Amino acid sequence: MSKLWVIGVACFFFIQVASAASNGLARLQSVTVDVTDKAALQRGAKWYMNYCAGCHSLEYLRYSRLGQDIGITDYKGDLNTEILTRNLIFTAVKFTEPIQIALQAEQARQWFGVMPPDLTLRARVRGADWLYTYLTSFYQDSNRPFGANNRLFPDTAMPNVFYPLQGKQIAMSTTREVMVDGELIQQSVIEDLQLIRAGSMTEHEFRSMVTDLVTFLVYVSEPGRLQRQQLGWKVLIFLIIFAVFAYLLKRSYWKKLLR
Image (cartoon, rainbow, N blue to C red; front, top):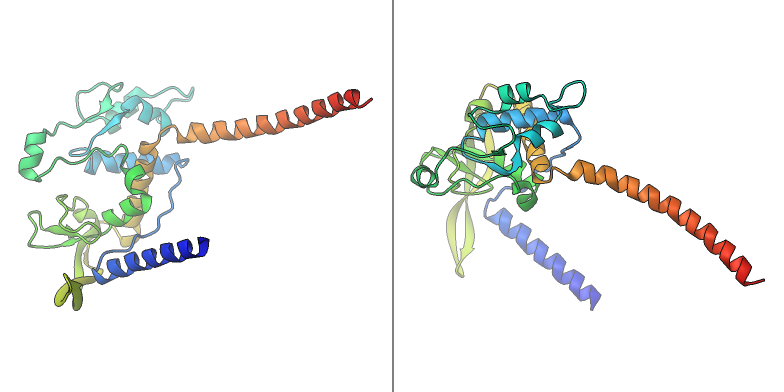
């Protein structure tokens, strides 16, 4: 029974991968993030505030918590509110408030057709690889309202805000026969994306920037991760020491009982 279950799962996975390939969807690219790297978190916070914060909020995170976690502190370890306010807060809000946006829902629906999602938990919902692939998969498409489309998430309402940094990327398409409702039809599918005009960054610089941004979003999705991991090691060490003493105490009791 277990073998049949394993075979069934493997077949389902193969069908899903083959279906994605036949439809020209992008495979997820792997990205390595390190939420203990405060320099990467600071750079990611900078990119978020400059390119994302106009439309996407982080309503479950406060500026003060953000500044403390990513190392915007003085030599005593206290939050440096002056540096935080000057570099990451571009509105009149207080540093103790959540990271909200001024964009109204009605305005967003008029401009984009939908309200841009809050990004606080986006990394937990989608995963780091999905976010990295999505942010690097925009290409020029004159049929879209903002002139850009996304290979991973077709017909996305989001404009390519990183176009000045990445440059002009186009889709390399081909025509294939695909099965639709039991019939073979000719359909254009995307084989690859090609950068034909560089932006202000090189490809390596752009991908490093996206990695920093994804690292920041992974941190945002669970700010207590660092403290939880540090506490976890302390708990494990305590349990090991406790187990040793418990074992020695058990031996002492059994020696007295067996006399």
